[in-house]
Image (cartoon, one colour):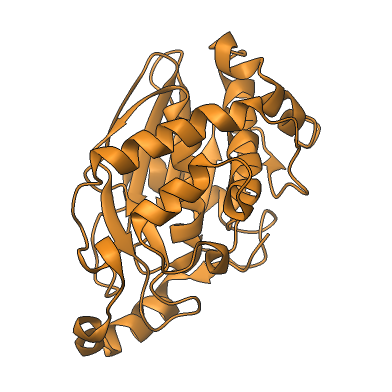
Length: 263
């Protein structure tokens, strides 16, 4: 698992260099931030989501922890809680496998283009933003809280049940460093602190290039990201009683499920 990013320190560093943002330039569609993902990029991500289910390659490792906590779902749905921030490069990296996994259980609309801070490690990591995302699913309730924007300024408040779960599980004994991000909590059963994908693997390429690479199961990026998407999928399936079967009983999810720690 890659290093977790302390919110406060990173936000402070990002705020000091606000004036540098305008100097950042990227090829192709990389200049426009906080814009809706194109239909082509969404289609490629859906292709990647389907292709990943067919792979028999298990992830090289798992960073998941088994927990026995409250399910932040609505009714019988499995709750998936993500806490991150736009400036955080590790949040930027983990959003890709998380997005691919969520697409398998429902419809994820409203994704927007984003990059991590231009001054942190792996600056300007290409990613998506969950702030305006809407998720519809029969089996999963997805809650995303982006606590700060790319400049480190407060964005969405962390309150209520998400705040309680974050305070309880983003602290010892689950991690030696309390309050780090990204934070992913699934069904009251599984905890992922940090990103299993390095932001350097994503880089600063355009959203189209990221999506194209993920849609090609033979690409280097797909071989890194798709097995981790399958692992997140396996954790969700474990929280939905294996539903839907068309997702949970696929070779990719079965291979990944073998790496989940015992409960």
